[in-house]
Length: 278
Image (cartoon, rainbow, N blue to C red; front, side, top):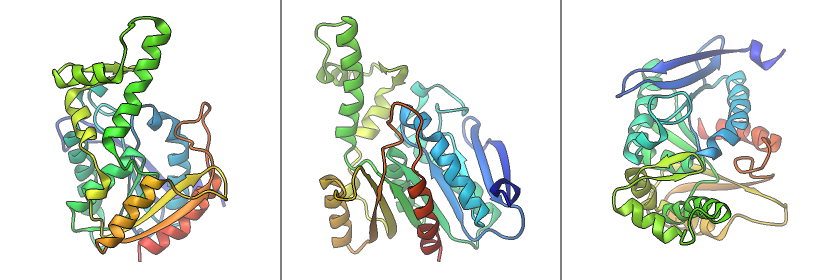
């Protein structure tokens, strides 16, 4: 039987915050869900590149009996506001509202926060502030927000240099602009000073998740997770955190030129979620 015949899909707007957040709920057509899973998407263009992969994973999980909620954060996708309205604090609040909505539906089943890239880092912070989160599923989390912000701003630097709009284009000048309270436009995304500051302050090593599975995509079976990921995981374990590291061979679908997927990751997640939701 086709997976879509086993599941219900319900698009709706969550109205509990300052503006409507677009959500897609997927769940088993019959019976109580085995667990609830809240998906938190990555940043800016990475969100668009990974939409298909997230949708395929959500459908498979729903067909296996899990309830999945995908939410577009403030200023993203079909939710309220422009990207320039987003702040890290607002995104944290969005995630909390979405988790609250899920818990009102089935408070007795486990809740898993699943995030990709910056969304995974957001899931870690939200999980630290909720006692009802059973575990985290982290796809290639961003470990250093300051470094991530610089990498994002380099996209503007390259664009400005190629178009000759500015002979003095530099990451340092963009960050100075943000510090002065002025937004910076990067590839069509208006980055607010508040969001930039929230991202820059992110240091994943400082968190202490209770239970998590960290999944790293690697380009070859001979390789391992990045040094930054291994350092963060070792630090978490040293603090008594229950963290497993899994590696999957595949391309970084959130940044490939064409829309791509990683079937091996989708298959591996099924067994991981079953373990996390116990």
